[in-house]
Length: 137
Image 1 (cartoon, rainbow, N blue to C red):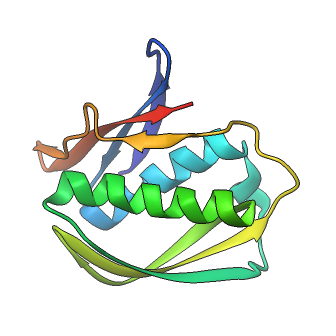
Image 2: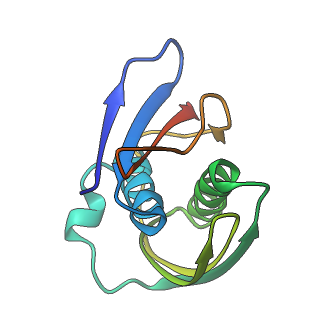
């Protein structure tokens, strides 16, 4: 079970995510962020022409989630692309190694300035991982 939904927030966008495990949580969070960047783009994307390797070490799982999304967002902005797919080579509670794959776009639907640590806390409730992510737009 993985899901995401957007909820109202004063000046930013709040994304609430749920998943059965950490890998799914990272993937569904990326999916939600991509919906902001370019709505439904990843639903039809194939033949990814961009590929980057990421290695991230963080203080804890909550920081890892935000650091991962921030890295992907940086690549998106630098390359004017949406990174739809991720393959994890190593994934632990405070570190990861992965490859992200994406495709260039002509424009973004929403310009995300930053992925913030505000309200970010990965919690486990009833065997489900949950977190809230605030995007500064």
